Image 1 (cartoon, each protein chain N blue to C red):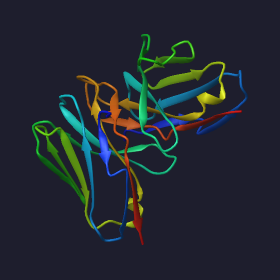
Image 2: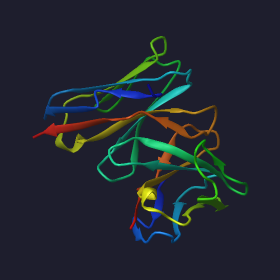
Image 3: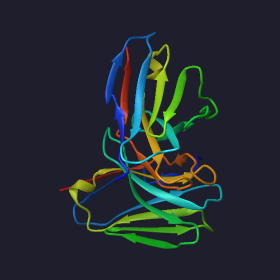
Image 4: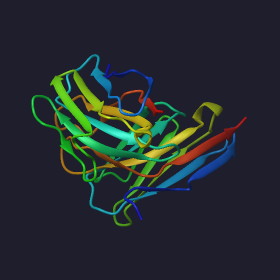
Length: 116
Length: 112
């Protein structure tokens, strides 16, 4: 149990276009999901906390108009990178907590975004 | 320095040897977690140790936590080639189900 999926696993897009990444908890309900970004050979940086039915909470320095997050249901959160630029190229990983208030998080397999 | 810094940044050992990675953090925590990441993949949760615990075991993994020194260590015994991966420590950013602050990670290579 506690499986988190992401789609797509890999995407290449042109500058100026928007890309949507989906994060799904397959066998549990997640009231809270998290979005991280990871640069090559670097650590993960928390971008935002996504709560079902409410607005996402963004970390300092993360542009909320550029990285749109929607948590439409207890099993789905989406991250849309709007007007993508090459510097947005990165590995995006989502995670979810299975139990409310639990510290343990389950991570998706990640999405490799390349903006040309 | 950043919260949750691992040391060493890279470690290469022979299969069968033990691997030890260390992590330091800055703020007070109620737990610390270790994750593994294979190249280009998502993270796998390895173990969580609470602030009132000093040591925890899970299979070939042993984690220690010293809250007075704000440090933790991860020991992998009898290493295998499949243990080759990056290992990160992570601490909660606040109470409850908060996002995590990750360390820089240790890239472990097990030579067959």
